[in-house]
Image 1 (tube, rainbow, N blue to C red):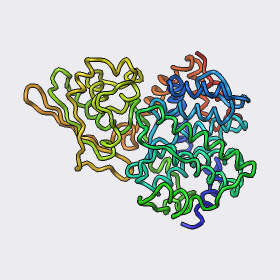
Image 2 (image 1 turned 45 degrees about the horizontal axis):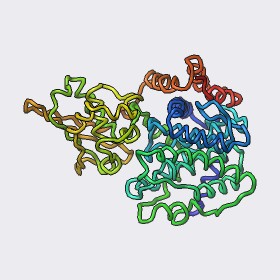
Image 3 (image 1 turned 90 degrees about the vertical axis):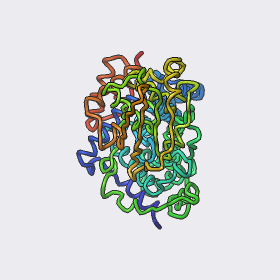
Length: 452
């Protein structure tokens, strides 16, 4: 698709809050509430703390807040910390390509704080970046499944650059340069799942977005064809994959943020497991208990079978990607919470004993849908010889089964309270709810620094 970079750049440069429908603004604010809450909770994780320690060492200026860590640093290092925090718990919301917002909103908050942007500006910037990432995801749907690139970083870097270019007030030409610079920064392998490097991917996306926009603002150049079909990003990342840039034809004429919607996670673990979790929780609500179970088989799609790679986890991070552990916890506890995925919890011998009877298998009859739904089929063999079965096609939190506003707020309060005192938790939620009226985003960012 010739002229794609020009089209994308013109859209980003021309995006404006006044052009956003009310439902898009509402969806963007819900995304902010979810992401900020998860980032506050994630700021307590070791991966985020390591980034924070690095930022403290390297900082020369104090222009942006490290969420939940009580200090300010350079915009690029703050973006790295905040993006990593947003993905550290794997509790951030999902979309077709993964978790785009984990890099986008940290980039928007960081760049917005450094420049003194308004709430209207940061909302418009986030929506612009999300729409760019969405089109990239639809243009290359096999990037993760067959290409093994983690789109949260590879596509998220380009989206974060779009956000930051919008906040920097770059014209279309400079925005095109920012996107080209970001395309060369794009990276992220799925084989780093279940390690600290997975959340680092979103930290790098946010950091790269800030850096690309700042370089472009100073006249730094890139190729004008880095987003063209058959060249640049498509050619480098999509070798042998299905690539089609036609989804960009709708850019500016509709909003994928509400058209397909994001999936807000009800459980703080790999989203690929959530359909199976729902199945087990439903069976538990109907009376199933661990002492009744002889064995459990979980049929999953190819991507789930490929990505959820841990059988019995060695630590808390791995437990988020262990189907046997996750389902054992769901069956035993009736809920999955933040403390489900600590090193201590993962070592619980009783839970590991239940997990040893659970097997995940590839079921070729289960097919991922075009919008990213991944069904799961759970069969439980009982000690009395009976059998229970439950299939879930759409997991809770997806657009087909969205969380309520009360559930979203409860999730935010639980996450944010790990880093903020109760008064600040309420103040942050209130500011995000009225974000379009905030004159300077620094008001919000100051509260996000942490108060514990």
